[in-house]
Structure formats: C-alpha cells, structure tokens
Image 1 (cartoon, one colour):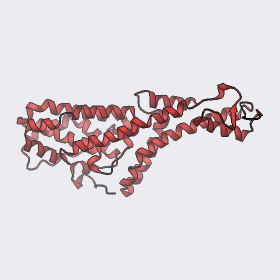
Image 2 (cartoon, helix red, strand yellow):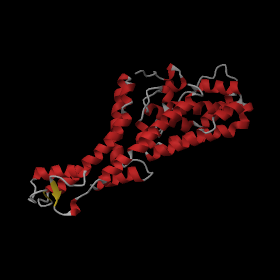
Image 3 (tube, one colour):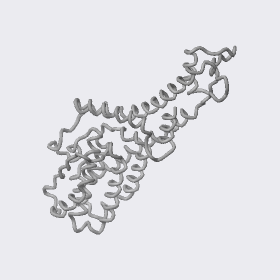
Image 4 (tube, one colour):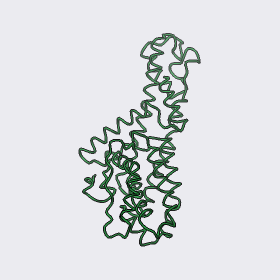
Amino acid sequence: MLAAAWDVFITTLTLRGGGPVASGATRLAWNGLLALHRRGHWLGLLSLGGGLAVALSLGVWVILLAVGWGMVFAGLPGAVVDGSSGAPADLLSRLYFAGFNLFTLGVGDFRPSVSAWASGLLGITLAITYLGPVVSGGVSRRALAGEISLLGQTPREIIAAGLDQGAGPFASRLQGLGPAILEMAEKHLAYPVLDYFHSPDPRLALPLRLAGLYEALLVLACGRDDHTKVVRDYQAVLEAIEIYVRRLGPHAAGGKGVAEPSAPDLDGLTVDHERVRAGRNAAAPTRRRLRAMVERDGWTWGDVTGDPADGPVPRA
C-alpha cells in the first residue's frame, strides 16, 4: 500500500515524472511492443502503446492497493462485518471488500467494523484525474509534429525551403516553435507515458520531426552567411530541441552506445560544407540522443533523412 501511495503521489502530484513502479511496468511493456515491431514492422502495434501504458499504470496501482488491503483484512477477522447483521465476514468476503473499497465509499453488503478501515476513493480519484493532462499532452505532441512537418518532411526539404524563402521569411515561420518545444519537454517530464504515444503517420511523429528540424537548422545556422542575421532565431529552436531530448531521460534518449547518425544529403545545396561539418561535430551528443529517441519510437534514421541506406523504412 505504501508503494502504491508513493507511486501515485510521485506520478500525479509532482513534476518528477512517473513513479518507479508504474514507470518500470510501462517501460517493460513498451520494450515488448518494440521488440515485436522490429521483427515484423507492425506500426499499428506501437500505436497502442500510449493507451496500454496508461491502462497499465492504473492497473498496477489498483493491484497493489487491492493486494495490500487484502493482506490487511485477511489477517484481521473482525475488520469487516456484514452490512445488515453486523456478523464478522469470512475470508472471501473480506478479500472482496478489499477490492470493492477501492472504488466506493466502503458502504455496501459489507462494511468496515470501524471507520479507520475505509480508504475511500482518494487514490483512484488522483489516478483518473491524471488521465486528462495525459490525453491533452498526446494531442499537443501530434499537433507540434504536424506544425514542424509543414516546413518539410526531410532535412533536405527544410534546408531547401530556407534557401528558397530567404533567411527572414523562413525565420518568421520558426516563431513560436521554441516555446512550444520547451512546453512539450516539460509535459514529457511530468507525464513520461507521453513517450509511448506513437503515431504511425511520420508527419505526426514528433521524434522524426524534431530530428529532421535539428539537422536542417544546423546546416542553415552554420553553412550560410546570408542566414547569420537570424542565427539567434535558429539557435533558440536548436537549444529547445536539446533541452527536449535531455528531458526524456536515459531510458528514452540517453544516447549511450548509439552511433552518431549519418548527415543528410546536401548535394546541390549551396552551403559551406566545412563549417557545417564543424557545427555537426560540436552537436554530436545531441545528434546521438536524437537518433536514440527516433529508434526508441520504432523508427530508423532513414525515416529522418529519407535515405533507405540509413535503415529500412518501416511500413504498417
């Protein structure tokens, strides 16, 4: 019961992320789905991850509380009595009351012998209240990905758009993206189950869109003198993405043991390749985290660059 109470408290009433019990269970479930996906490329399976993670978190808390109260009532024959006769309840009735008591005020066929035994609805109420922000965060996650996808589907497309439109007009399209990415980073920190809200549509897959945008802005910020006047606008978005991947934590995007991803195709684009290479080397830790984040969401780096040589592109 203490484990459940602490887990619910950490998950629903703090900004420290999920509790250790629920987070561990959801991480194991996602790893299982990811393993099946990588064997068969079943994107539809991963799209169930968000709902499964939320349901599993609630289920873990209910089971912990039910088992805890069941053990208490099993060892105290007089703790539960018949609601009408007042006679002590048998073992099965006490175990039934342990589960019944989690979702009601404890008033029914059986009741506790003293009011101290009634736990009420507090834990379940907190858990259900937790669902609202999670669903809202999942919607915001897809909306942000869709907004970024309007800039281009690959780093090359985004770079080409920036060159064609010019520094000023293109920078104006980036306005608002930095704060939106930072807000989503804090939502992921507060509600880690958002990591499991996978979108089978690459246009709405936030890991893909953030990785592609980061690669493109690195090139524009470092490789074009005529874009230097808006580098601060680019840098704000780059730093927001860096904060985002750090917020995901070691399990989602630590980057350890992940090879540095390949660079996007720049053939035919007029950029300073040497300066781009230097900027990319400086950003190597973030790029590895981005690759880890992309792969953790069931995609490959080829889905970012559009190059099949960087990995097979999964299909549903």
